[in-house]
Image: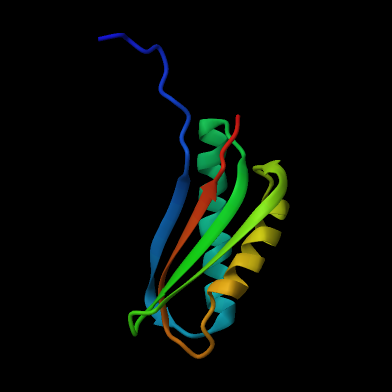
Length: 112
């Protein structure tokens, strides 16, 4: 069995979490996007990779889920670039008046 000096690059990195108190307030859901994105960027920097695509998935109390994906023009680990993509994803994932319980954010198409 051959020994590998390093591990293969990750294909996807993600950060997720429960909102604690479920909410239907778009401002609170957006705040969670920002917080999860900050955590995801820390992970991108730790692994020295950049995201080529971002995905956001929001789970709702009634069992539904919404998801949005956004491809980037070039791979990035910059907060401003990823936040713009994250906003677009969140608009696709948001279900008006539904109570959200948790969010997953995924960095895909990773490159060094």
